[in-house]
Image 1 (spheres, one colour):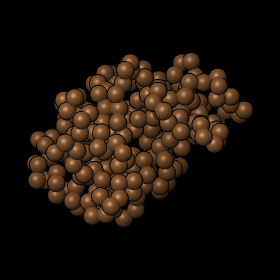
Image 2 (cartoon, helix red, strand yellow):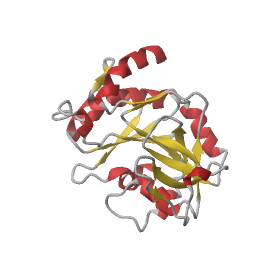
Image 3 (tube, rainbow, N blue to C red):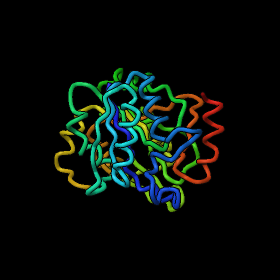
Amino acid sequence: MKALIFAAGLGTRLKPLTDKIPKALIPVDGKPMLEHVILKLKASGFDGIVVNIHHEGQQIIDYLESRDNFGIRIYISDERDYLLDTGGGIKHARRYLDGDEPFLTHNADILSDVDLKRLYRHHLENPTSLATLLVSQRDSSRCLLFDKENRLCGWRNRETGEVKSPYPDVDPSLYSGYAFSGIHVISPEIFKRMDEWTGKFSIIDFYLAICAKTTIRAYLPDNLQLLDIGKPETLAEAEEWLRNYE
């Protein structure tokens, strides 16, 4: 199974920690964020992992080499010349991810107790879904809107009231609003749909542009525990969280 880890972010929320080190290498409970994610993916059966890099990317390459790639196949998707955002990053890594099987994407700064095998299997059991997004009911100013069949229909900013949707006159009150986790499983068919998308673009903007033409589905497990450790206030919480989880 294949996976892509987004490790190219600038880590602006964690400055000055990230002035001279990539966010993905900031240690949490003695291990870099990136290592926690790689080990979770490896334990879940993923044996081919792509890591995208940008800010201080050579440090990530050197770190992986020093750990002998944790005994699995790891490929580098190099974005040091130009940061491509999540959608552009997926398209840029196509040569490593395209094929006959879905792949999973995972932000380097997300910790969770989700069963990645179950998430992947859930996607396989729903072959009409182009993508399966891990979501939660955590408080968030921005949320994705899903219908009663858990199909993506739009996006909403709860603070400003802004709504994005391919459907006209969407009433957010008629949909379930969930926070996206940064973890999703994607069928390789997505690359054909990206042909007209170039350069830097967000995967959420891409999903919103195509969700009326294909199925993008939510996956909402019971009692999901998830922590965004890309913020100073949660970085401190992460060590205790990991000790309890592990």
